[in-house]
Length: 377
Image (cartoon, rainbow, N blue to C red):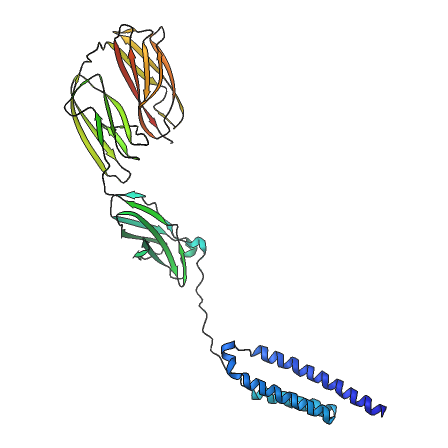
């Protein structure tokens, strides 16, 4: 009896090992033939039926106390039968796109574009990086979110197109497209402006008779506008105000004032005045000599003011120095008729007039000036 029990226990152990082997084989089979959920759903009932039959047969074999060889043979046959009974459909999977992705740094490199223009037609040009030329790239140029042009790309990666701008602000986006991948350059904002700047003159009035030898011109325009007087630039303050002087001989004088905005729109005005000797005694001759013709914004500038009367120096004359419209100092000349002035250049770029107004001890007067260019370069 003991030997029979040992034999039965040995057969059960072998059977368990056989079941384990078949289970592992089934797992490998199912893993290699796994279907997506939506495709495998129709075969679930077949799989369940096969597993139920397998469980019943194994139980029957154990109860019947089959021999080891019989159990293993039956299990092998069972596994083959289940495999044959479970259909494995052939699934055609769609081919994956082989388009190479466009690297983030493969965006188009744009040529310089004017940020403000008075022309409605804008040329947009540039090139692609050399490593981004493969894969038949194409270019799209969008204006305010709407495709405006699709220029071709030559063998060197260069492209060019002309787009039409709308009045006001325009956002330009240039994109390289290759397959399903896109890479865009940074957006450019272009202002299309056709309106000329305003220009108002306060001094002098057209047809007026003015005192010489230096004629004061004052007025106002818009912020960011440059102003020239007879071709010479003058400083314009942030609020658009400007003031300068023009050296002139006695007699008729024509003054051309031009205001030009960043888009290139211009407003021109012409004044015709007559220059006369000052009603006061204007016998003083005043010269202003700066240590430089240009300076950076905020830089320190020095200069010499010399006052003479018929070639003789005028000591202790009152001196008022204006830089543009700002009075920077009031003082007097020394015993030699000179005054050394120091001031700070304006914070805005442009041309500024440095003017010295002088009054002598005998109430004689004079005026002189020099032009300083304020630039960051």
